[in-house]
Image (tube, rainbow, N blue to C red; front, side, top):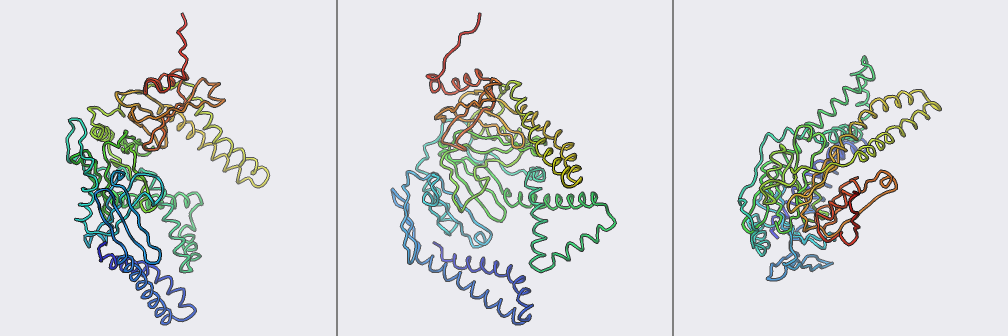
Length: 493
């Protein structure tokens, strides 16, 4: 590894110590006095930074790697020595990551994975090496598959960041989550300083002459505004400098990140399709993101990015369809193919679920209100007034989103409302079918057919199709696989 890892560890630990120093000093000053508290905190910080640097120095001295003709080996450890190796023919990914300090020093972390979901045993991490060494390792370990992929689509840059796409960040589900997190952080930090009561009192004084409803609305708007700002900042950090490239030999490479740079490589021979994802807020503005359906893209404990397989962030739908077509080397993306709709029984099932999801909590609140306090009755009424129209809207939207078809070499299934997904799965990648039919589905004459695959989520389902139509779709998508279990009924004269 690069010896500057010791400096990186010392600086990171110093940042953590600086962040903890203020609340710790204030907490100790009440018992020992300010001067003594500062002395204790400084001594503790020096000890903490020195220990981290010493530990990383030992790790650096005891860590070696070797790239052989057949295997990649990593030896590390002092008291417990670990010797691990991966067969080069099993390597499926070589991803590069560099946080801000590493970028300033020209370093990267290299993660070499086999794509197996077996924890850390399927991944070797070289942390850190120089940026040039990381690029060399990436090319060397992936060039063995440089056999090319048939097709006429261009190589090089397929798409780059359009700064206008940032307008979709505030309408994602991240914004309200970050708003709630900001409110919780204010209360937590004030509690550290023993000032939580004063913060609540200050808020109460600001809204002394304001009704409870108005106060709730204002605080909610403030939280949403904070969430919007946080969502914009998060989007910039994650997707700045984004570009999607096709490298010679058939490798897709995604590069992105403002403070922490990330590089993810996907071999096209492992690609089994794409998933066009349209969350409700983003879909309202005519946008979608594109995820890869691929084998061998495992997520280890060190790389738990929910967007690890994302090829394109939220972008206008025509751009998403064009990128999906480029990635699949198709003239037109199968995600835009006309879909076969599902029977009205599927709509009825969704409406009934919406009614139950709203009416059961309303009934419980009404019962408790009758027994305990009338306030719960008003809450039950509010839930009914808001929940029923929202539930009906989402149920009808979910029904309109259902669909399936066979488009060329791909089968396409679409479902969902809060998170609508249009998955185009390569028919050759289907290894099995699961046909499910509950008691209520049998009564309605519908069933669900699930394509099983080794890629992506592992299963893609066409929900509540007409019984005959669903089976015919599965039989057409993968000829011969389901046929031994089907009984063809001749049409009635």
